[in-house]
Structure formats: structure tokens, C-alpha cells
Length: 144
Image 1 (cartoon, rainbow, N blue to C red):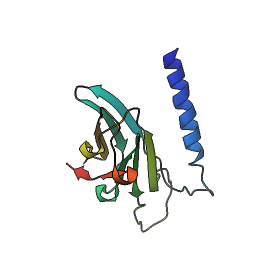
Image 2: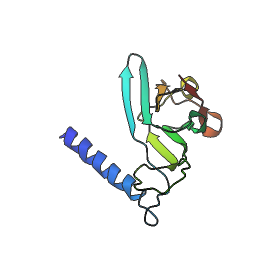
Image 3: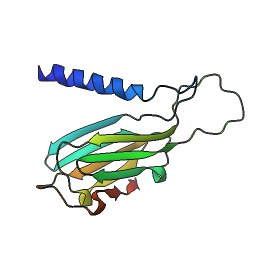
Image 4: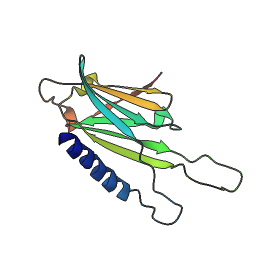
């Protein structure tokens, strides 16, 4: 039963997320919604979030850790072409993903690494809720 509930929960979240991506007018979208995986490990005790960002300049990616939340944002600009599109399927523009964290993390120990279009963010789990100035900490994305 828990697996069925998790599957249904995931489908509902995807449905509502897709609602925000409805084009304002034909052929134009306000941005794109990159795919995210997240998982927990015990040794080391940490949360890991992986986000697909092919074609995104790592310098344009912002990673912010707040109270049980991770926000990844940036922009994937459409390349300039000297011609007329025959087909347009790749989403471009600004993106923003909000990931709820199931546990308190130590934002000071967070790391973000960009490799071949994938950003991997590791967040050490904290024994108690950390106190952060302003409630948020920005994590610099390292390129490998």
C-alpha cells in the first residue's frame, strides 16, 4: 500500500507541476522544469539531490539551502540561429525547482558539483536544526 500511495503522490505532484508549464500562447513557454532525483544515505548520513541541466552554464545556476528546503534556479537560453525552426521541442528559459528536504541539514557542509549537464548536491544531515543568518545559505556550484 505505501508504494501505491507514493506512486499516486508522485503522479499528483507531476500533474500540478505540469499545470504551471502550460504555454501562455501557442509555441511559447515561460521556461522549463528540469528533472530531479533525491535520495538519502546512512553512511555518510546525508541527502543527495541530482538535477538534469544540460545546456546550462554552471555559472548561471543558483543553489540556496533554507529551512528544510533546497531551491535550484537559473536559465537555459535559447541559442541564436540564423534560420527558421522546423521543430521546437527543447524547453529553454528560466527554471526554478523547489525540493522539500525530509530532514534538517547542515547548509555549511553542503556541496554542489556540475558534471556533464548534471548537478549533484550533497547535504549532510544535521542532528538538530541549524541556525542560519537570514534563514538561507547559497551553495557555490563547482565544475568538475
